Image 1 (cartoon, rainbow, N blue to C red):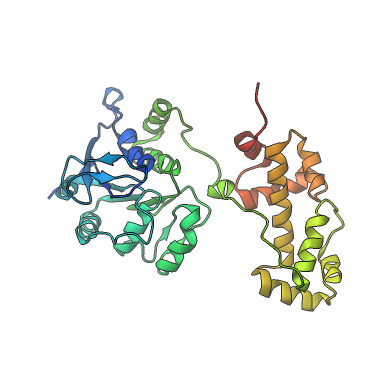
Image 2 (cartoon, rainbow, N blue to C red):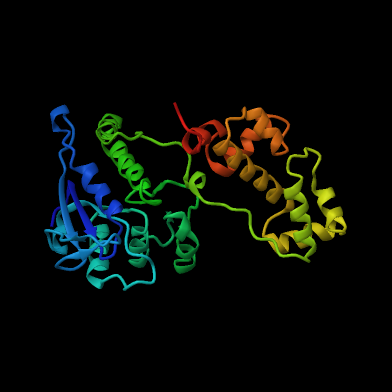
Length: 325
């Protein structure tokens, strides 16, 4: 069967989040033919016949059987049910494998990436999913190269995205890639969203300070560091002294305990504190930097951008809890 590039097939899974289910139909229902662009035909199918229950308890009934996917040049698997639920039906796996073999573009939104991985289509490829499930994704599918800090990953004929709103980013990217920026921008304006968001999903990841057990020498050094993060003179030699260890022993013990170097951990904690201050105060960037042990905003910015994915000012604009107006 010949697949049509402007026919978009969507597979709704039982237990899927309703927001992820709605992303692709909303993006691809917009008609661009008046400007010489594409007009898509959306074909929504269910993993099985009959009503499907979303994670919100709202029942949906897909109008078409899985066989409708055989017409689609783009096949989208929205956010699926949580891992550990009922296995993906063999009919669904066969349908997405067949679509891939016949040249369709496959899109896994959020936990939809698990379906593509279960079908074996992500082996040896880069892919992402929601940050809460990245570790489970990597453990379940070791042949997949998991990208942790990305809103979406484009591997040509397969695209995967992070959670919820990142599905919009992935679908807009697909429009931009295949039909040009005008189509993507027109769609973004209709949805009242940014046509292309900066940064990756690291800026949204909850990264609390880990619990520190008393009595361990590395824990002692970590506590000392957290109490003196604003001190620009705090360095690894002082942390080793706080742990009452030689520098060499401390470096080895710290890496064994934390899984990274003491310097990496210290810089990360300083950036975490900067995130908190940026989101809860209106302090100038230089003041924020000094409160975290950096000499000024210039010294803070490259470390902040490396860890979070966006500059401090962009992070504050997105996550400030201060009232506006």
